[in-house]
Image 1 (cartoon, helix red, strand yellow):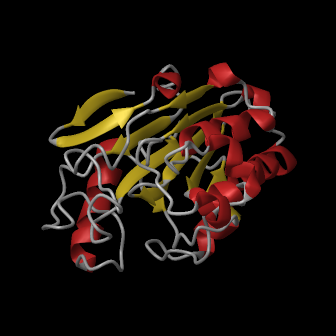
Image 2 (cartoon, one colour; image 1 turned 45 degrees about the horizontal axis):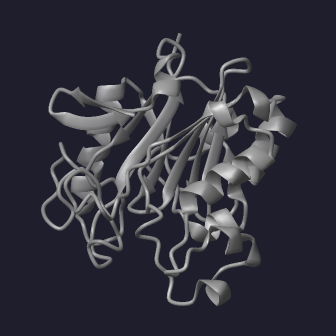
Length: 261
């Protein structure tokens, strides 16, 4: 990833996706450049966690403005594996600004629509098919990884848009790193599929788990870019961290979309 600034708004972009900047827009927004007060300072994008609704509205407007999109789609994420296709029917009948419930991934080929995942330790996974011109955004904490939400999303992309996983570019946001993902009893708390990724100190390499899972579904290793930035070890400088800040903090936005032609 590389750091970028949209005026005074700090963000990051993936090298893989930046190569196609004329076809797809994306950004991993930091916690800086918004209007929210501590402990949500300052570019918090999530409603319902203690920040004022008006602050979140303004922060989302900032994101839309700097990326040049007219419509932002997000959801009430629940650590599940439900995938929503953002099509004309959804865009025409879902009121703008109203988040659908129980959705943790989006897929669309609609232009002018920004898909946003809200995170503060979980992984936000961005997918782009340069051949079919389809994008996806996935919210994947350990529960989502256990449920294989990436696999569910890839299936939706294949069945509904004809995407081939081998053609996809996939990028994983800053998230809880292998030195910070400590579980008191991981062998009992996590499914057996996590066992190869648990070290002697009861830490889980969720980064490696995620990249391995993606490859098992046909995504090419060279087409995966991992940010390799741990949100907890960032110490609140650039990113929100649920664990690092004791559960009272904001969420940063990770966005992808196809610009209007």
